[in-house]
Image 1 (cartoon, helix red, strand yellow):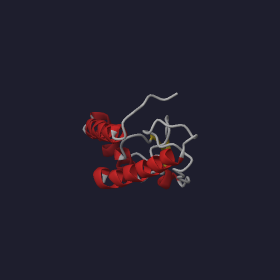
Image 2 (tube, helix red, strand yellow):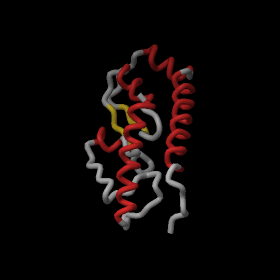
Image 3 (cartoon, one colour):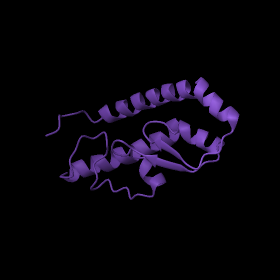
Image 4 (cartoon, helix red, strand yellow):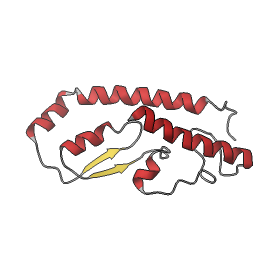
Length: 128
């Protein structure tokens, strides 16, 4: 069902997502449209944002003093569970980058657990 992948592929994907997130963040923060919004200091009832590979826009929401509704158009990244208040159960829920189904043997569950927690740790070290 899933292609055979090496164990480190998902770590490479993590760093690719990190780079793309930094690029998107830099482009957005330098955009004239955002500068105008920040300059006007308009009041917003709520800000709806995609939670994917960067938390950059959370800082903008903080500057605007507006509550946030975060959504994801794909499976949540391992580091999103905690902030959403959702349980993270790597023994049953396959990690996003692992290309596994829920039918994991013990080795698959162990690799999934390690991957999930390693990605969370990497997120805290690299993205913050």
